[in-house]
Image (cartoon, rainbow, N blue to C red; front, side):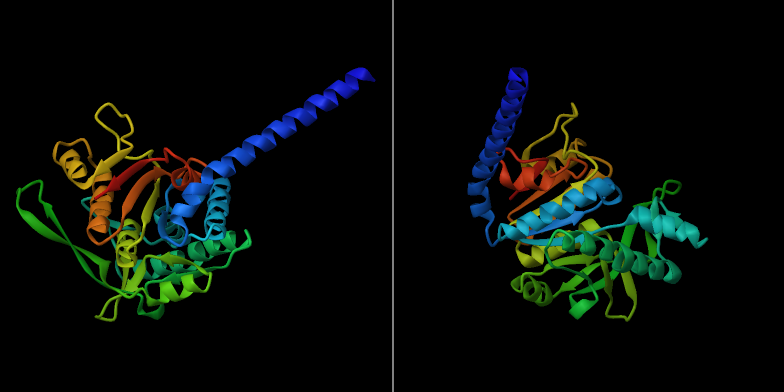
Length: 308
């Protein structure tokens, strides 16, 4: 009997200790919650976190918590793997030029169906299941975004001559009207936006989600833009994480080759967002559970913060 009481007392003591730790975490987060209260946070959701159910559920809980803490989260999402899978299911072969997908009329119809349809509504449902009110949108809704046809210049490997690739219905943001987003945010809704938009020419354009998110964040003058990716952030030449950069330092790292390959367009998007009025941009690993909360509500954050 005595042994049983001791075990019970130890269990109760451990539970109390865990509760104290949880309370300490909440108390330490308070100054950061106050700092970001009422601020707009644009979050680009993509990569492995989108296709992992546990990470997707954790993401939805994080977004609900941000809203409860009186922040103003705006979600922009991608969906490249899901698009590729759907095209394969429909026996539509993707064409590529120098590694870039060419979106013909049939392809962009599938892109819109997947991005603005199934993926968008899945994210909305996950957030709503956490007790908040998310609403799915794309650039077409309320004339939020008008796109222009993207022109990609490359150097031909054979002739070494610069040429322009026609990527079909691939676009980039040209005009942005934030009135719909502001109206929804003011009514306690959480906008979840797919990167599809019309052009003034009447066509529908598929827009890179990183570029789309950067344009939205710039138009909103967001306090933070968070890129959830599959990497920890910007790494130095020894593969160590760089926790903070200013714009000039980031440009130098591109010039000397430290920032290379697929990280270059991400960082360039960050720099453009800063030029357009975003206070800070973070490239971070979305595979880390609750990475958003670590970044916003702890002292050291997560990933690489790029500031003006």
